[in-house]
Amino acid sequence: MEIYKDLSNPASKEFEQLLNSQLSKTNIEEGKIIEGKINKVTEKFVFLFVEGLKSEPVVDINELKSMGLSEKIKVGEKIPVLLERIEDKNGDVIVSASKAQKIKGWDKLVEAYEKKEPIMGKITSKCKGGCIVEHIETGSLMFLPGSQISDKPLKDISHLMNEPQKFALIKLDKIRGNACVSRREIISSFKKEDKAKIIEKYKVGDIIKSAEVKGYSNFGCFFNVNNELDVLVHLQEISYSRVNHPDEVFNIGEKHDLKVISVDKEKLQVGCSVKQLSPDPFEHIENYELNKVYKAKVVKIMDFGAFCELEPGLTTLLHSSELSWSKKNASAKKMFKVGDEINCVITEINKEKRRVAISHKLTEENPFELFEKKFPVGTIVDAEVVNKNEYSLFVKIENLQIDAFLHCNDLTYQNNGEQELAKFKKGDKIKVKVLEIKVSEQKIRVGHKQTQADPFDWFKDKKINQTITVKIISTDSKGLLVKPEGLDLSFIIKKSQIAVNTSDQRQSRFTEGDRIDCAISELDLDKRKVSLSIKLLEEIEKKEALEKYGSEGSGKNLPFSSLSEDLKKKDKEKK
Image 1 (cartoon, rainbow, N blue to C red):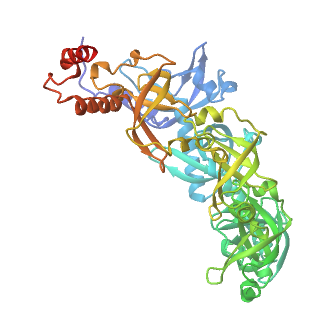
Image 2 (spheres, rainbow, N blue to C red):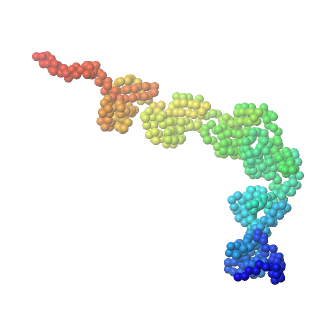
Image 3 (cartoon, rainbow, N blue to C red):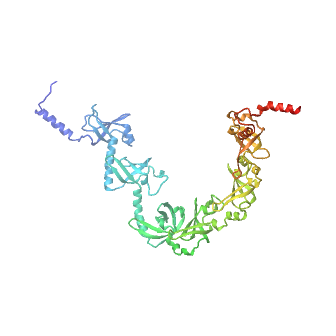
């Protein structure tokens, strides 16, 4: 092959001139957006003609369809593409239609953002934290945060999906190529002009009639005025009494009159008050007396009680603990309804803390005091079982609306209180003795066994070490369950107390129904405690035998050692 290095000849110069004139017609540069004319369409690809390129760029047909350019996929149509590589390692031209669209769209978004102009878009789908918005003009995708969808909470946005509407560009990240938009800002901009005109109608001192409770916050309550303006009543402006949260006083949907106390035309805010519609009741709080009965109006019912109004602006809490003497878990919801006028007694007035405490139960006689007067401790009365749990009965005495507590251990003198408890059911009649009354704690304790003769009195003439006869009821791993003859009480002789010798401490030596002797090893009448022992009886008998017949170790002084001599004496006496 021959290579010509001399380019100074006329033919070479002419070729160079023609080549430069041809390339100058089209500015070909990587990274630029160029227009390509569709030259050929196949099943999978679209071939473009771009003047100045040595080969035809190829675009995937699915890429164009996904961009919504299906109608333009025909010979002769022009499509903008991004020239990524003029020539790759295979000699092919690399272009991208989607990237060209994105770059063109981004340039338009930047322009709109800098000019603070709204753009047209549509919400195409939901995502975590918000929605995806498509720019109608360029197809660029943008993020719409959930907080920027509307100026009020929306449970359902289906009516906004795929609807062309205006959005404000609130953030652009040029490095990442991300855009953030707001629909709320567009809505608010229109409302702001209208709101300014509405606020001009109000001035300090105006009375707003029938404003509707719209919502709560920790610092106050929001009211809707004529469906055109939301106003705030601060927590301190709700009532002259202490209020911890607006829900203690108001219910959503209620209507109340308001007094305008501030108008801010710059912030477009109107401040209102409820309490200033009436005079401060704490200025004449001295008119109220402690422990005196007053009428109060129920204005709000809660799980923990009811809020009552003694007069307009003077609201106080009637706690559930002050509702009833007899009901332990009294419910204001079951006893009252909003608007009821009830009797109450003022129990506390604190002018400094602006607090008044009331009680409803104090308007009635304390049933526990009445019970104490009528049935003092020691009284035996008839009662009815009204309730029962796993270890006690609750009984009602006469028509008093209080229950007395009867523990299973006070049902019987036997050690089987739980078995005795199982015999009773609701409605059963039972005789009881009043054992304890605690008015301050609202407790009454009664017993059933105390109405009967105490079988323990059988031990009054008994003493420690005394021998008694018992009958074996049963045996178990603990020892012997026995019952003294003539007494309807059972006791346990522990295994260690069955015999002196350890080898004889076996329950198997005894059978149910056997009559045996044992000794009283412990006796405390005050504590009603008795311990029985066979071992102690053996030790007592052994001690007595030793005292009578001699020492334990000699053997010669035992009764059988002198038996032969005793027989000889008897023979002599007979002769």
